[in-house]
Length: 253
Image (tube, rainbow, N blue to C red; front, top):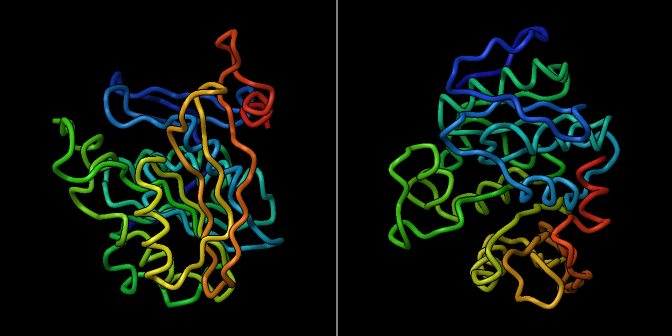
């Protein structure tokens, strides 16, 4: 188990890494140049998550730490703990935490969601956020790069493992927010209910207005009542291939 510690340092990067900026350079993320890299999914999911004042948030499958860092920025009173399996990504995420001077509120831990009970006590978090692997282990082309393979395919943990871990960590009434392919929405809803979390909010993501949705944002509430709210769609690009106003606002937060 590895925790982030240390002060802010200037990024002295090896050739295989980059520093990428969000929010007009106010947030910087260290990433592998050729490994797994974050996308707009992380930005949309971090904005979708509901966090109460002073809430404690778990980010499962934290990767580069981008969601943990965005959540900490959007919710200045929150405490965020990211859990990531891959050692190299944990190390880079820790450096990103220190680079952004968020070490007092953001911690990255090396851990496996399949054995979350060995790391945390049950019902010890107010909210959970998760960008799980999208593809089944044997579906499509499996990337030869280990970081991309583990992040994109269910070769280590499955959707159910992440949802089960989220349910274990959440206090009753706490939300878990996920992003997932729209084609697997039924799987996501079923998994939430199987693990004691009632789907409460759904929002479909469309690349352009009028085209089928590619992704879905979903919130399940532990022990929640059966009442689902379908939110207006999130459209990423306008007809001129520029970001929509809403997407621009998210990126400039």
